[in-house]
Image (cartoon, rainbow, N blue to C red; front, side, top):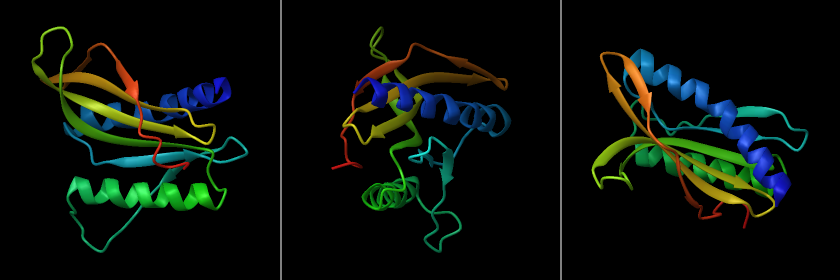
Length: 140
């Protein structure tokens, strides 16, 4: 499980710069995914359902299916699904925008990392990380 946690952390560290860049430059981001191959290479995962502007929920669903397929075929040993959510802050209960990163590893390690953020005048500020048990929906 320790290797699963370490490799998931490595994957999270790889996906964060892109979301920070997208938020800083565009003020928003579309859900996206990355995976770690058995050799440790980190790859981006893309899906396309025919719609140029599909709802985020559809993109998340397509990415989950791609992750499950890749896990079953042995292409991936860890996955990261990145999307935007609104969460209540533990300190105040107030709702905040947050980056959600759902991390799953073949070892069974699964965590949902929430990184609250504020974007004002193109300045991106992060709050305290919130971590909770993931659903382990990729490597069943």
